[in-house]
Image (tube, rainbow, N blue to C red):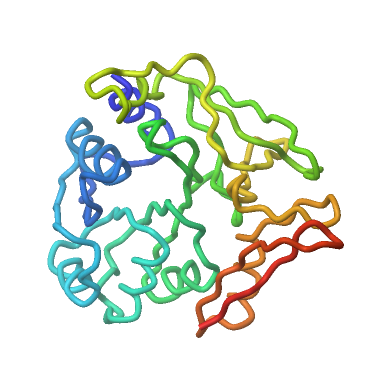
Length: 264
């Protein structure tokens, strides 16, 4: 029920039709690859080409040249690697790419726009929500956000100490899961009761566009101020894109915590 509900919700936002060809390289054991990349095209009558692994960076652009997809799903990491090995015409048939799972870097967005004339629309989801929660569209899009919530999804923000903009995101809707299976009690379902705590810190503007600030567990509390480790990593990555960076919080006797940056 929740998978089909999410398909109908996504259909209301993502412009696909039987005239499209969808290239899905995301595995079906990932909820994005299952619902968006497999069930949605089957339900809507969209031509679908499945490839077993997103990690074959040289092969997938060649397949795209032959299949001529108009729509593709992916993550920033995968899309950036495809672009590095692709010839200019490999993705020329694309109308747009739906990206999720991680933030899309500006350089990835520019590459697909300038080289392949394809827009990247960014979305947000979680497995418990089957998974799509919000997505940008060709008409309603705002860079740096994950779009607006899908129809019938209810959202609320819980205030978090030290965070003045946004809060902890809770969800409810027909696309939510039934519950978790417990390792302590095999075969027994622990039902989801009421609102689901995503563990994400987000802000929502007046038009409903959602900006992900980071995971609640990935904030450092410095002198009472909550600082997103993910935001620090993205800033440093923009300054030194040729390297890989990770930010971690460590105890600090004077300020509570401090941020340590690890760079390759």
